[in-house]
Amino acid sequence: MQINKRPAWIYGISMAVYIATFIIRFTTDHPVSWMYFLIALALQTACFLFLQNAPFLVFIGASGFVTCTLYFGSMLNFYRVFSWYDLFLHGTSGFLLFFAAHFFYRFLLRRHPAPNVPLTLPIYFDLFVATTCAGLWEIYEFSADYLLGQHMQGPMTDSMTDMIAGTIGAIAAAVLVYRRFKRIPPDPDTRKIFTL
Image (cartoon, rainbow, N blue to C red):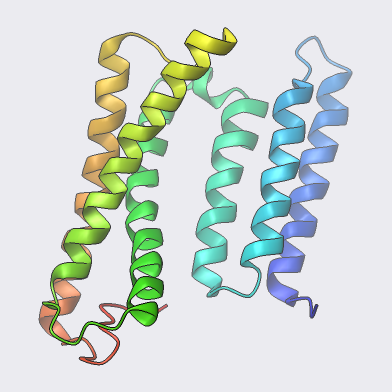
């Protein structure tokens, strides 16, 4: 398998920073949890292995989100230090999931061509997938708390504001794509509403 240089550099730097942070924090009164450290390494490695040949913005989006959630959020305790950080990441996830849903839509369309599909269908599809994922994440957090004794989910207000933030992020992405759609009509053959 050929290694893509830009993702490889980003991956290598990320790994070095994660390991250095873990070692340095290990000598302090507030060491990094082994679980968070290993999950961060695993997810960053998964991003590199599976997305290094994807469009570069897709790789950066996924890799950056892993860094923000697990490195800054969990390893450096940004979730506790900044009260707005969790809400910010939920909004960002809705935005990114909108575009991830669009790549899935494009994959389905290649497998099952549909020439008479309205050109606005991808926007609705992407929006609904992204908002559904926001709800599914809250179900996951509730299940982890209830079944595994974790403490991922706060009160009901926290769950609702997280879902609302994810939905707002997805709507923001939909508005941006729709404005582009109005300026540049998509290719009628591939139903592309944007290119990366």
